Amino acid sequence: MISKQKTLRPAWRGMEFWKWPAILLLLFCIGIIYPYAQGAGGSNGMSAKLHSAELHECPVNYELRHGEGAATVLGRVAPRCAVGLSPPTLAIIDAHGEPIAETVMRGDPNGLRARIEIPNDFDAKHMQLAIFSADTNGLIDQVDITDALTAKPDTQQED
Amino acid sequence: MQSHKTDGSNLRTIIIFGFNNDAPRHDEMKRVWLNLHRWVGLKLFILLSFVLITGTLATISHEIDWLIDPARRVSPAAAPAKQDWDGLVEAAREARPDWSIHWVAAPLDPWHSAEVVGATPEGTLKRLLIHPGTLEIRGERGWFNAQRLFRDSHRRLMIFNVWGIILVSSLSILLMLSLISGLFVYKKFWRGFFKKPRMRDARTFWGDMHRLGGVWSLWFIAVIALTGFWYLIEALGNATGQRVGPFPEQAPPAAYMQSETAQTSISYLELAARAEATLENYRITALHMPKFAGDPVEFYGHSKAILVRERANQVTFDSASGEMTSVTKGETLSAMQRVSEMADPLHFGTFGGFWTKILYFLFGVILSAMSLSGVYVFSARIRNADAKAVLKAERKQFTQKATA
Image 1: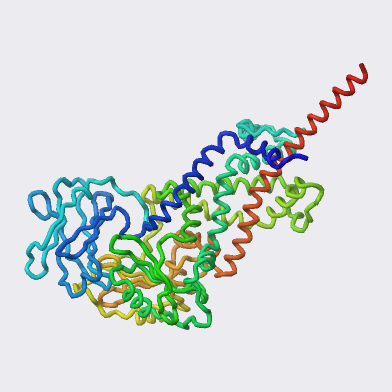
Image 2 (image 1 turned 180 degrees about the vertical axis):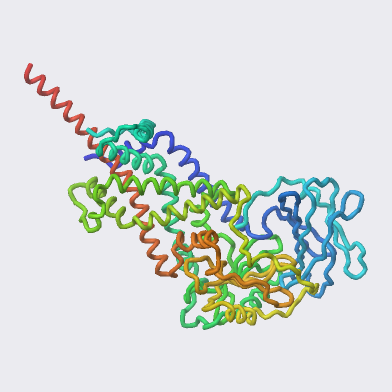
């Protein structure tokens, strides 16, 4: 009686070198499932390279996406903070305190959001994300985003 | 005895025959096809089988989630005739006021709950399962579920960049080669549809099953391989910055919304009614909320055009004024866009709802079994041939001794 193990041996041999990269890929795939399930973070929307800051006692999430010719900073104020808030201006200011790009945060029932584009060749040192009052145009708060801007470009695809 | 060498010489044989001026004999050509069939099926058997099995499970992954998660189950009798989009959004906002809602998905079938996907303040995607009739929150879940497990394993081997997709979708070429070579190897395959498998031994039985499964799933293999090849083209296009979209109607509206108020009084129900009045037989499956300033409210769904993704039937509105900003009709897409939008329903088997998914699942099982049985038959044939060769050698030795 030929055992099943022995019966499959020629196939195992026949796969030659090719079985090893396949096994490595499968091990990688299986190995990533647990951390993926634990992290449970999707790649859709604001989850990639996300940074948090507190501006005017209100949490602001922002992320950076590098694109062709420009980097985009996507900022979002939590919906609960957006209620009744006059939409402020979100700006990127350089080391000398000069705004290099700014936009008014606009509202919808999902909160206040803004998208700012800055050239890719910017000097990231001491770059600040700042929030200005809509009423007085005065600086409300600012946070250093040098780390976010100097982080490795994110190539993760939305899915 | 048939050669069972499976090294690079087989490929060399193919190349030589391909460039030989003399017409190769029929049986030689058949051997070339057989070697190609074996090469494709055997060398990458482990990877191919994994992708086939996870893909098979992915076709019914929503149903698996429904089975393992009670919060997803609702009585079909309680399903409302029309989705209460406002109610679903409000229920989610009330339950999780700090979430940013990304989209609201209508129940997949009358026995499924509705799903709201949103981002927490930390940016993590989460799901809220809501009863579509009573608007009761049935549960909060993470992004990961059976659907994500099988989709991400099948689609990209959990490699979360474009290379994962390229790697998996390039297997479609092997699948197509396997299909073509199988047709050449199986002489008069069209007679094999009703051939009963012989029960002589395991090898014969699984060999016959392999052929029987092959002829019945010819259409399925062709569909999966061709759509898989399309995904390869799409992924390569994405990697090099070439995209099929955006659709002409999807161009961003010229004037961004002017309102700067944080709260608006848009009625999604009203917008949905206007969208339904715009597209013929429009059945909305999802409401996508604006993510950033200027982003519209989007409705995806099914309309007249068959075999297109839901996003191909799209109506968008200005998220502040409620003005309709674009209408995309599946039937008006260009040929290239139509091919692109056709790939998903054809590959997933979702074009006919629950029953086509079940059909795809069954054929997926057959295809996965073919991959496994092919390797078993190959191995058993060689094992038997080796055993016969040993027996023959022993007999010869015995005869020589007896003669001496």
